[in-house]
Amino acid sequence: MARVVALVPDLLFGSRVQSMLLAAGHEVELVGDRERVHGALLGGGGAPAAVLVVDLTNEDLDGAALVEALSGAGELDDTRTLGFYAHVDISVRERAERAGLDMVVPRSRMAREGAELVARLLDR
Image 1 (cartoon, rainbow, N blue to C red):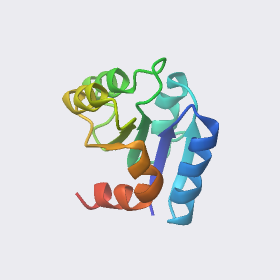
Image 2: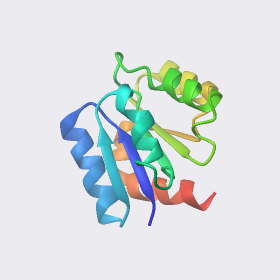
Image 3: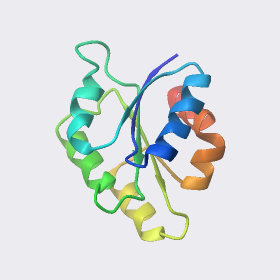
């Protein structure tokens, strides 16, 4: 279906996200740090990723700032963005929305509906 890059440093949750998206027929590249995102988005010279999933729960990552920087550099022109946050951290959600992420959902929703959320972004 689509190429998805998932920036999820938490290996356990990252594997869960990867598995659900693979089961939905997507090609998934799981990356654990922001330094590998650029290369993963470009896909080794192939088609750019259709969706970038970003873990907003990791304080060391600052996913909102990363998406904002990538967007500003034109690296997300053909890529939709989906971020997930801890449901109690409303300020993270608001910051991600201001940074321009296409969809921002609680982590629990990502765990339940990740494949459906990606499908919804692809239909936009």
